[in-house]
Length: 255
Image (cartoon, rainbow, N blue to C red; front, side, top):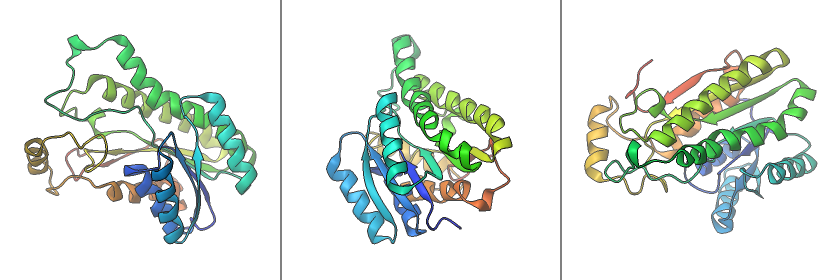
């Protein structure tokens, strides 16, 4: 895939989808910066898995909601590795995917929307703002943002979460339009419900079974299912793609 030796920053990579993406890059020979917020032990496990898979890796602890902390993290990665070739914005505000206990629109405050927006778009903004100057100087780079198929098909109306992810898609497409002429691509991967992850552990079995029955491939996504499309969009195999959203949900949403 041409990823050997590439330097990759993955946010929210200590476990779940982020960890699976990190290991997949390492398996291709990439150097991986495993960003995490607070779970040092989980980050260390992901780093160890990356090294065992054949790549170089280290933990990059920072709150992606804190612009100065992100800048310090990115500066540290560039000092250590010389550059950042690929950014995967996977981190988001904690959210429980539980249809039965979700908050209805009348129960939500505007602050709930703002919190999710800050977690999705705000974090991506901070990371892109810090990483893009050195990508611009080299006139190349790839950014992959993790969105959601709920933007296309809100099978469960998680109002605040889905609105934030829709904004992330718009953010990505605006960046793609602006950065394309300087050789930087920006795309999204939009998974369906991924199980098991921290956010989906509370999703009842009956709902998971109903969702699988409505999905052509008859199962839910696993964290590893998301990694392949991310690697594709990060690599030169997708070198003439930008501003796109790849749905990874077993065919539940077809576009």
